[in-house]
Length: 304
Image (tube, rainbow, N blue to C red; front, side, top):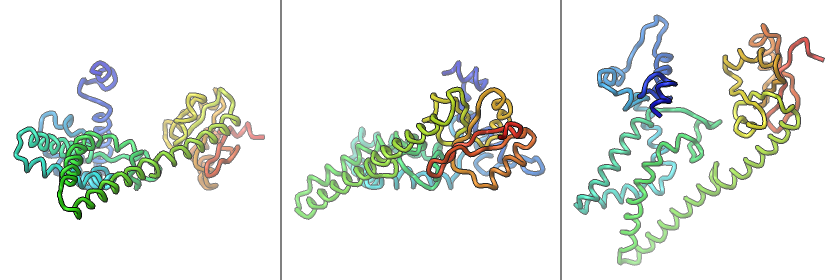
């Protein structure tokens, strides 16, 4: 890993996270007067040795609050609530080992909340949706694991009460937790049922795309690259200067296609008359699949 970091980024301590953060900071902080401004936390972190490695994404309070509420609580609130109760019960026991567990859990929660809570990215077509399928959710897994024990302790405590009324509360709570967890796993937006349907739709799209493109084709894709590759060479995404710059070379070498959300006429006109005008390229619709369309990237002189 150290060798890869040095060969790729030039430093043992530099990773894909930290190098991207530097680029993002430079891109967002340079004003019209080319003056780099720094916010409150940036001023503090720049004075702390190795702070950029401890907090690679800086400290952003609004992001922290949004992500902690969304991914740390609301995503599985029916487990978060008994977990908090369990942590309180563990601390109340005045047992050194259990208090140490609570402190470690609190430290991990605070650290992850600041580090990854300050980070914000979206790989979901709808950035407002918070689901287990978002790759961002994996950064909160240590908290989920650590809070499982306190949640179990809280439920165990509730199960041992003597009064029938409280017994019913325990049974209802247990059924609620199991039911909501099952709904999240099976019928959530990215649950088993929807995932199965999505996979079926993807395979249908893949079949249509492969049937309408030669084996040597290059396909530009925004979201479909994961199921088109390795059957076809793939470039992603379309809306990138790197992609636009490579298009003239690629078209001269191989058949090039674009598969993605159907482009409105104004976008096709913009690509032909503005963005790709100097290269005399345009997008020709081949076949539509629901709300997506396969286009072939053509040169004007090849139009028939």
